Amino acid sequence: MKNLDGRVVIVTGGSGGIGIVASELMANRGAHVVLAELDGERAQTEAQRLLSQGLKATAIQTDVADKKSVEAMVQKVTGQLGRIDGLVNNAAMFSRVPMSRVGSLEITEAEWDKMMEINVKGVWNVCSSVVPVMKTQSYGKIVNISSGTALKGSPSRIHYVTSKAAVIGYTKSLAMEIGEHNIYVNCIAPGSTLAEEDPTPEIIAVREKAVASRCIKRIQTPEDLAGPITFFIGPDSDFITGQTLVVDGGSCLH
Ligand SMILES: NC(=O)c1ccc[n+]([C@@H]2O[C@H](COP(=O)([O-])OP(=O)(O)OC[C@H]3O[C@@H](n4cnc5c(N)ncnc54)[C@H](O)[C@@H]3O)[C@@H](O)[C@H]2O)c1
Image 1 (cartoon, rainbow, N blue to C red):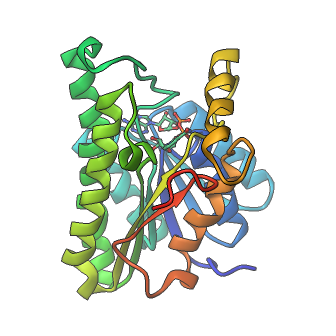
Image 2: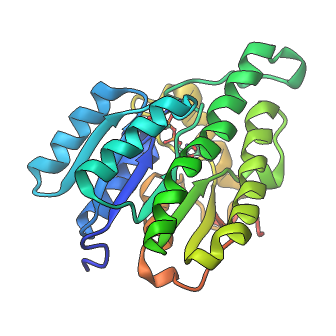
């Protein structure tokens, strides 16, 4: 199935755990994927790996928290590839840019601010540069990555959960604002996903613990999210906007 043929899709944090697996699936469906990633070296390595498989990929070092960096990335994409059909706002302070998994009183002000800069302002920054391009095309598909914790709550890392709740509100409001331009905005809320490169026994224990609350009794992997992300970027979701899809094996029955 090549239903993304000719489409240009930006994936922020595109060489991270979930980002690269989703990028690879979309590239296999025919898209030219742009890995807009803080770790430029890792993005280059991953883009080369996709190119060596005959897929279309470009790496662009980008900091989503920095408006100028985002503007430069978007200019590069439109200059080199001519259009932007899809955007996956996947970059976040999570494991590769690690967050503290602590209680609310232990979070430092600096980390709170950094969380909001990347996870919330970062989404707005990228949309602010990409939406004008999509408007000129009268077409675009945006997928924001939230988290199941925004719907269920969590006893630790309240800054992360708060940032991911903001992404859901942002999704709904942006969908209402730009739907008339034929631009779709949806959101995916993943469950606890084993997406770390070299997971420690502690991380594996966290991922295993999540299994008990699910209808589907297994660990969640990035592959579980690649299909839903590709669905929202592709033509099979052409009458869906403003929605949040929980992908967690049936833990949060939203
Ligand atoms: N893995 C999970 O359990 C889980 C659960 C719910 C939601 N999520 C969400 O899924 C998304 C992907 O998570 P993941 O597990 O692949 O984590 P990850 O840490 O592997 O991926 C995030 C990527 O974003 C990049 N990034 C961080 N800050 C950036 C910045 N300022 N500019 C550009 N890129 C930046 C990182 O370098 C990394 O490659 C995140 O939004 C995360 O919050 C993950």
